[in-house]
Amino acid sequence: MKRFLHRLGLFSLPLLVAAIGLLLLPVDRRQRYAYLKDDCFNHGLWIHDRLFRQETPVDLAFLGSSRTLCAVNDEELSKNLDQEVVNLGYCRLGRNLIYVLLQDLLEARKPARIVIEVRENEDRYSHPVFPFLANEKDAFLPVLLFNRDLFSDAYQAFRCKLQLSKDRIFQSAPQPETRTAPYGFASKRDTAQLQRLQAHQLERRERKKDLPSWQRDFYWRYPLRYLGKIGKTCREQGVELYFLYLPGYGSDPERPTGYEHYRAMGQLLLPPPDIFADPDHWFDENHLNAAGAEALTEWLEGRLR
Image (tube, rainbow, N blue to C red; front, side, top):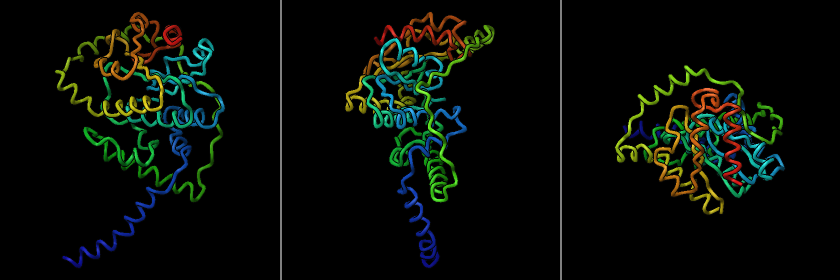
């Protein structure tokens, strides 16, 4: 048995050394973003190039999901506020990705203000692309407690780095051209069918259930850890932090669940409920259309001026 374990150790040692070497091998940050070319209409590469390759400064930045992408017209805000505003929303949910994008934003630029999207409730899972964009420390030493995706994220991060390292060594992946668009807003003019919106509103009301505070606090432990890191980073960098409430159609338009957490870390922006109550403002049950974005952006202009 001892001989078997000894041989197993000798066999495994080179693999372990190779794995550690791979983890320590630097990977170009742009490679990570370009790796996501088939996700969120290749918006990740635009985010990288807007931050690291364009000369235009960033005075005010929005971070969030596709709700932010569709709701905040950064070009209009830039023009009317006489500041450089950028919408860095990215599809789907996960506070750990917001933390990663925040770090890149502050490394490349130092905006005076950052606005982070909040929804009806906090999503308690890892963002699907977190392991691809996070650096080695964040990917392999993430928040541990209440992290359901801990091992799958580590595996995906290792797999991604293996592929990127291979591409770099063999130069098998051509470098994409620099994305030069200055703004990230991506809305649509179509209007959702009223029957569909009403059906989702009814579904949301039937599904809604007020959890006991202890149960809600348990589910929120994971995202709150990342929100705490976000708040601490902004304080240390001297950045003013805002939270913007963007509910879906048929949700409570007044305020998000756990709003006290956001108010403890920054200013909570609560748009007028009539913006979200108007069915003509929606592309689907989760995203404002161009008319809804126009109404919200006009309100934001007055609030942030």
